[in-house]
Image (tube, rainbow, N blue to C red; front, side, top):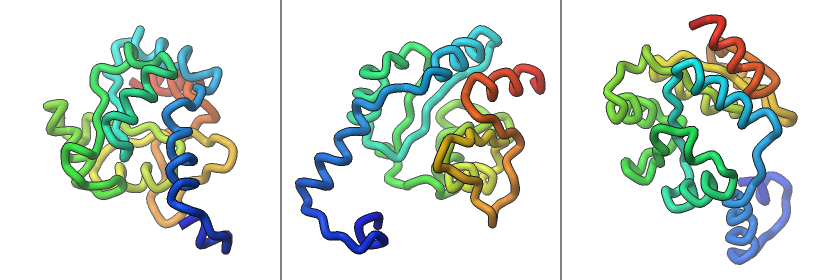
Length: 157
């Protein structure tokens, strides 16, 4: 969609090379402190991604985040991309909790909108270039980064 909207043409090799970058992205400086703070306060931390499971595992390993997460869930298992409500409901089932007992934290407005539609509480990380999806209900929490989000969640729960 991006090349089309920018009116440029790209080859399949260029697409493949570009998508492979996600496996080695560096974490923002606040992520480890925020995840550790949540973990120290008893929050269950799980990932839920549209990325293939192999890419997810490599990404977590390369960013040294694997040990923060109880589970790393990929839509590979159900072939249903977020923001479909079924994806979030599947994650709740995998975790043996009700959707209302979950909170999705993301920096993508579409992801927050999908989680809200599925009945989850939501927290939006307002990273540069990201915005809340204006046609969906607002998120329950908004923060500039994961550490600030962790502080809000600890105070709220």
